[in-house]
Image (cartoon, rainbow, N blue to C red):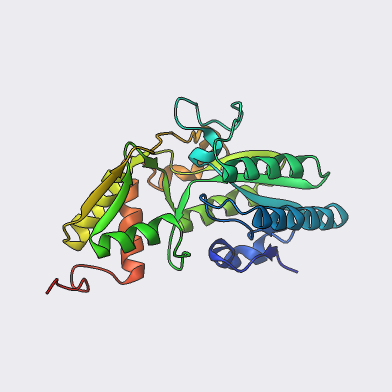
Length: 258
């Protein structure tokens, strides 16, 4: 018997190598994965899937690992603490949906662990997610940047390391932010991509950005191993470098404008 992984997407694939280690856990790694998503049908399907998996976990006694979000949509547009125990007033449909699912799971009677994720980065991401979308824009020579916007980037391999530790320690009945704790201006992310690829990129600024910091005090307390993952103000650069390497994109492969 192995860990039950519900879903076949980006995160589900990355969790398969540790499936044999956590047979007491079911993982819901399916559903809405786009912070801009607002489809009522998609939200309803994820809600129904959560109910189904939670009912199965209640019967089998398995812990249900559910992935929520630590995005601006959950923690607001600035000024908050970004802590798991802070008052939550989601400011986007996606954030409201994920927060409602958290409450639904807590009331289901199933054993659970809720992880609020930062912006995951790694090979094989869906094209609509942040880094594939941003890289595509950089390669095309024009990027849309929300003025003042920040993003907390975390390598999916580091997320799997954190999850492995949390499950191994039997953590349950908790909500935990899984992020680097570093709010990186999107301008800095574009700067690094430009430098690595040797490109000049035109930036179109929009006044719709949001700055927020994700608190990782609880994560660091539960998983002291995060100290060796390099979560510093420059961590995002190694995340971006690994992403570009995995995508096979560098100065040598970027087409020269004719």
